[in-house]
Image (cartoon, rainbow, N blue to C red; front, side, top):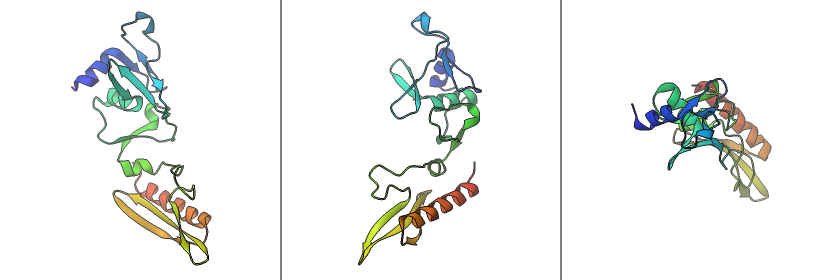
Length: 164
């Protein structure tokens, strides 16, 4: 068994129904049975033992299966700090990114999967998605909302065909 998993099993417990991780053993006895992880700035819960920090959803996966996940751990309901076992799944990065709902802050259109390009009299909009290392061109549209709807529809079909 991995040394990190052994350390985690000695120091913390995980409740699969609630997703809560509690201290079993701590250098400060008053912390035993208290919640061991904390919410980080990214919205994900984290756990620190000594000088090592883990994401709590990866700790939960390791404690439940006896091994760390090979890929990403996806929060099925998209709530970053909901670490209930029924809400976690080991999935590849592309499938995990299908859960993304907001565009990057730097996006000019502020719509996920939609970019604009200049034409003679204004702008046109394209819908593209990246999946398993390939950029897929969905189409070109006259409005940003048409492109967004096409992107959303295509992404939904991808998700249905690649459900874990």
